[in-house]
Image 1: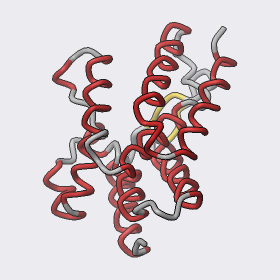
Image 2 (image 1 turned 180 degrees about the vertical axis):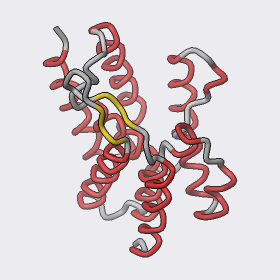
Image 3 (image 1 turned 135 degrees about the vertical axis):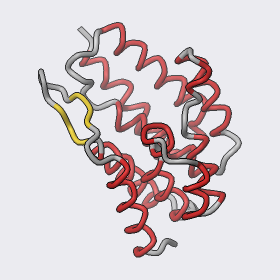
Length: 183
């Protein structure tokens, strides 16, 4: 189980780290607070915990809230480890793409390889992340970008489906529904 005080500490940090970050919404010119994404991934994890009482809820929730902190904010592995321990820091690091690889496909394959060395709760966070990201795409994405993103979602599902049955089934449905955004 988790400590609500500890989770609130993680949420405050995530709020601070992602303050001012935005992403493109579905409608032309729309900008959405990035914290919406972090919350959506966390909600997916809460639903998964509700379906699977064997999950380490504390690890899953912390990794969900911090999953983009190293990648998108410059917050360090060492900072995460100092505040929340090695297991959480290792999970967040596995969820962080290695930008030095340059190629998006190589970065995804590398990240999936590292995620698969982690507890299944980290796998669940990646599944939840892609489920969330398969909502309406940003208004400026081309069909080519949407199709590539869908292909990547299929790879994630294939590689991580054994991490959480509930989330794997949700991701599979979201993949099927995503075609409505492709013209």
